[in-house]
Image 1 (tube, rainbow, N blue to C red):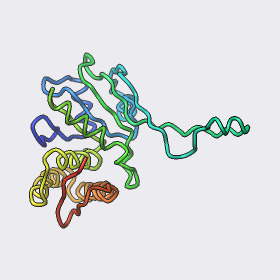
Image 2: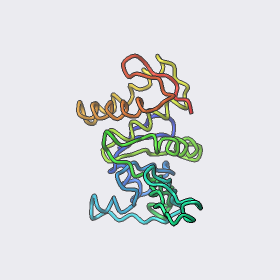
Image 3: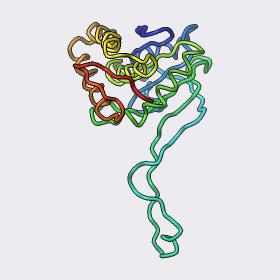
Image 4: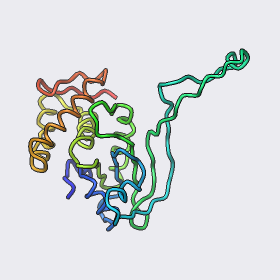
Length: 216
């Protein structure tokens, strides 16, 4: 069952998302999927009995850091460099029963070395804009690590949290994780948040000494 974080903002796992997409909902309008694959077929791969219809709206790619694009000088000199690889930033689609939900999916793996910052801004913008229309579910596979880190960053950005306020606010996720996955979930949550936090140049914050506002 999805957990209410703020008005029209919920956190959950893949089971929560699958149930909403299959059965429909009068409350939810948007779903943010943070899974290792952005494809809607991930749900079927997880459980073969689940088939969720989807209609693509758009896919957005970014140029990878490896390689280099060719220039006119390179062509004139007979040198042709390989183009930089493209990386899927997110997929946006209508999905679920009667295609009534808007789902944004980011191919985010549940690994400590995965760079959340590549996807952070688009995820936060998706949540912020679509809470105006209806409830938004943010989910990953277990509802513990990736989704919790994204929601944490969202609260920091939107609520202009002070050190004291942010520390109190973050406790809702701690309680949620303890209730759902006890110590294992809590450890995954802190690992994910630490990795996100220490890579953000403008995010001067420590889990033990307080939080500072996420400057967008």
